[in-house]
Length: 95
Image (cartoon, rainbow, N blue to C red; front, top):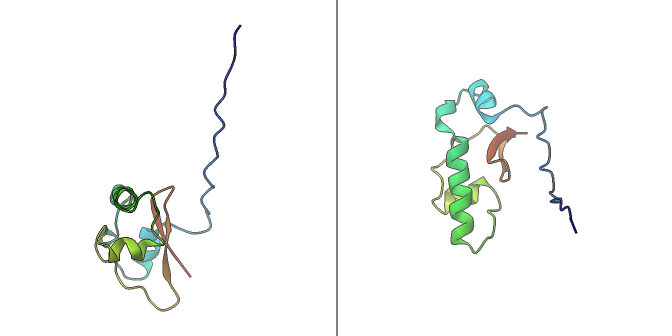
């Protein structure tokens, strides 16, 4: 008897292409893009946070900074905030 198995996988949500990457927005705001964490740094911080907190995900990027998993982020102008996509290990600056 031959059985076929297929893995049922949830698809990651598609990134909102209307929101540009944090580096692009940061440059327009006069912030050096090099001051922002890259994807590897975000992935490491997210992973280490979850390991240290019994699998719990951080509430937001600020919790990763407060707990020492990421270096402090540049201050944004009023009305702007950081948005962390933990599944894709990406950071965006949104209104």
